[in-house]
Length: 270
Length: 97
Image (cartoon, rainbow over all chains, first blue to last red; front, side, top):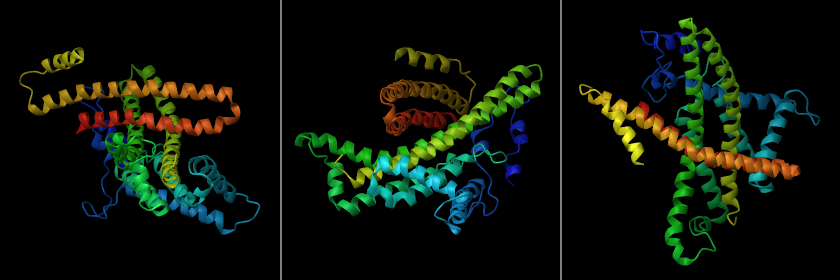
């Protein structure tokens, strides 16, 4: 199914009659037809399939790693323990501190879900990052939002809202200015920018790869410009490597920011 | 600022009189989209360059704190980059919607 959906003939068909370069409309490169249940709440398309894979692959990997857990890890257990160590050392400990270890499972699953969803941008026959549709980043950002507000309310009761909206050490009269700004930045702009950062990064990378693919195909078809076509192909390869890095970096930054927000709600003094 | 509005007006003046409303909207949207993203990329470009330069300097001076500087650097990049990405979203909205 995947190979039919990402058929390059679609791109060729989208080109103009005169042999000029014509880029496919945006709906052609981000909107996928439903495999079944079109128009229903259970409509299942490529994005849903990638999201399911992003959910199931970490579950299977961690189950395989933990099935025969030994004190001296080897094989797949070694790999998965390294990945947990990475999240612990690079995300949880710098951003929250030792008392943030209870949020490690959530951050690990978040990291893996986003990373695998992003990786499908460069996996052949798929070439579509699941996070280039707003639904996935929005839901993840809402999860982070509910999480950090919930942590703040749980540990500091209503004192969290007071700390967040009325930061201590500010002259009384300035609260007229500070409180609306703090409310906007903490409760509205944080989830919005979390979602938009992931979404726009992945969509931009996807459009970049589509642009260079269309350019390469068109220049190869035109013939005389085959040298420029080679350059364009080299750029396509380079950007594929770059997007491979971006896929990891965005997953890392999303988990890191979620951890920073949870840490801020847990220790509001700083 | 007036130079920019003049440029936009010049582009719009080239729209043929017989162009339909949809075509005129597409032309105005496309020219506005390019300008929006170009302007949105200036600030974050300067910001990220300055930020990474300072981080490299910090790492060169104190290599033992490189890990911590790196994490903070990525955080700063994420915040700075958000502005450029909002500009990119505006580009998509103007160009395609």
